[in-house]
Image (cartoon, rainbow, N blue to C red):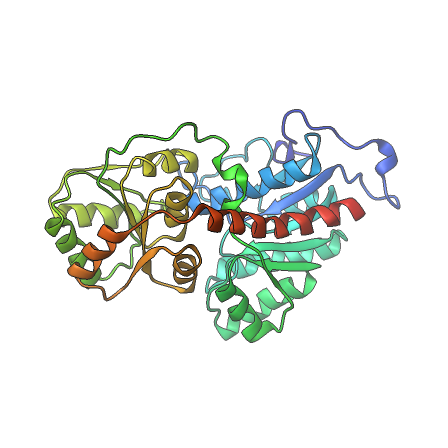
Length: 371
């Protein structure tokens, strides 16, 4: 076994009596097969995927106890680096080796069902390996977007292979049911689990008037309206929050935006962790975001968010949390009005989503205990 499946410090391996029917010992409780990827320079490519994966791991550890052994996948193909401690490469051989040792494989940690050939093949790979190794598979708290017909068979196989399926919102459930006839349960994004706030520390004082999270497909009209809103509100300090760190993605779009806005700004650095990004967002008076997890980060730290309703997932978040929102076609006046009226979500609503997020954890741990 290589270093890429080294259990986390303090974990204990199962005794030799755990050998089942001549197969290798199932000393790993859960293998979380997530969408997390490293960039070429070895940092988390998507802060949202990294955050979800880590919260899933923390939630499972809390439910199973301090001696549980949980591994997470990381796609290191871009960086060429070896996975860190407690991580597993997404290569076929690494996945197979790790899954043979695992009591349960949990496919979760991002919008894993969408119009993406790489993700479709990855979900298929996880499902096939779980079948070959006779490892129970659960699909947990995933996001779903529209899937073209030619990719549906890949996802369909994974869904059919799973013992249980949970999705993070009603929109995802509707999309999945529309073509797979799958019996799934609505959970909630794992970021609503209490573990998301473990490392944050005390609340920060505001130092930015506005934080902004844009996607690279932001339209010229939307960018123009945002610039107009910032100028009309006389915003003096801004924070750029790029959650997708691919070249020519969020950061490039944000740099172009701030050049047009002609306003002083700071940026969450590329090397920052997702908890670092949350701390920075906590220093903003309001966040306006196209990115789902930037808006969730803001909600968790009490920063009012204005959601740009780009897809079903951002619209669902705005509706569930009662957040201010604007359409992609919003005018500068509409955006300025939404910023002015934005308030943090009700703590009771956040608590309800946290309780719903436990559904995915419960399904994973129930399988572990019966494995």
